[in-house]
Length: 226
Figure 1: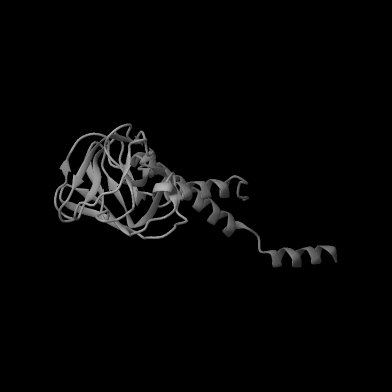
Figure 2: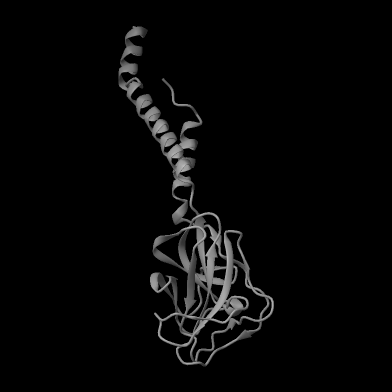
């Protein structure tokens, strides 16, 4: 019994599909927009926005911050993702240049991906701008462009402690923070893929079990020659 030439590529493709939630995917903000670029000297200022996930669940695997001129940050900045008053995950964007620039944003991976359910609202915000020369887009003018998986977003501002609620000021979102994510496959799709991987794996194992021993073949060949 021989393994089909397409078996191994299919297995690799299936495993790769299952691993998508921990690999590079889609940026929440695809264009930072053309709002004025400013700095903020307000004490303890935090900027961000409240956003609503679209019709499909998403898996967020990194948080990031817009880097003016893409030349690195003068100061480090914390970026957090919240559900109401609950901090789901956060990262620290280090100062200095970075090799993780994507679309003008610098990203840092979360310890574990976060599943955000469809049609629910979340808050993302960044801190560390008080007295910093690191700039961001304010909430006036032409705002950022979000991916199609984000239904809506409204600008928020906070000049208090990290964990307190932000004030909704309206307008386009501060840019500011962003995140990377992958779409979460439907449960039926995952089950079908797991079954397919199982069948392919069993086929490979059976093929190896039924494969004649090479040494036995060589001995048999020599005996026939004699």
